[in-house]
Image 1 (spheres, rainbow, N blue to C red):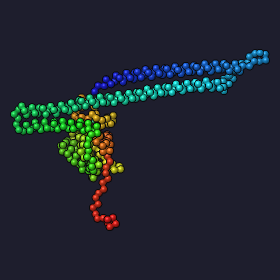
Image 2: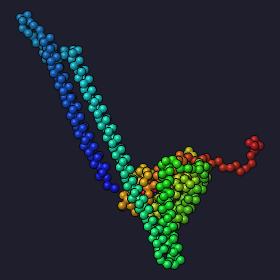
Image 3: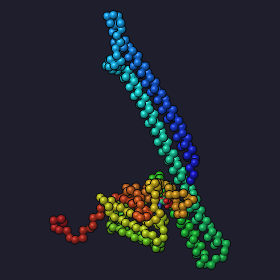
Image 4: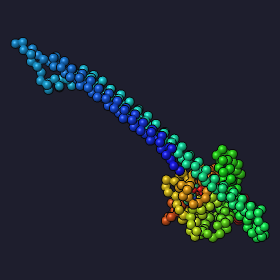
Length: 363
Ligand code: ADP
């Protein structure tokens, strides 16, 4: 994505603000110089006046002038001198205040401009990414469906070949369906029109099932290990919870190499919080992208150089769903390589059913 369009107004703004800044600095400095000048003229005049006052006339009628030190010492004690200095101080304080307010306004203006330009820029990048990704993500399966159907229509294919063609078309249609589903889910999450069935859900069982299906889907292409504590209950919507776990597993698969390891852990962490960790040894996520990837349509890197398919909607949806369960999500580096996604959400304390007999006292 080229950003020259956004760069020009920023450069123009900063040049203009620098000019305004320099002009105001000169103005303030020249006002201060005038103030200083006024002060020294007033003090000089006052000094002369005091010198006159302190001059004595001797008996012989001669004038006896006071020494410079005497005049200076007397000057410092007079009210007139204090008044000149007070006036000068007030003038300087006013100029300093004016300068401060001006700096504050300019700084605030720069900050707000920078923020809105940055937001606009991110929005542009996301929209650009979205258009490129979606058009690519849609074009490929549509092309594949069309070519499979036209082969079936135009050639007298053997039954086996025909089944293969239908299979290809179905796979592409499913891909399209998944994409449309993500776009609709994101839109519903955006305008809060998503409906949920919130009930007590066994997250341990649900996670084990998602892992089982995930393993079957990736067909041994990654080494998947899972460590799931039993009986971890949450108050939640099971399809949303499935979506959270499977999206994170799908990403761990998508952004790592064949044969690498994917680890899932589900455990009770501090104070009845349930913690889900999904780690991979894949490409990892640079620090500056760690918060951004949860934004709509955000994908790391440039579309032209990216080899993985995607819409940039998965993590946006996951974050919204986690928040809907009053939880949080973050990503950290996995060591020595890859990423670890960490989800935390409140659990429901599990109280195992009492299997023995009640004592007489309790009964
Ligand atoms: P998609 O995968 O469809 O692009 P997501 O919202 O799921 O969209 O992810 C957003 C971006 O975050 C991805 O494009 C990718 O750059 C980055 N990302 C997500 N998961 C991982 C991961 N496990 N490892 C490395 N990068 C990841």
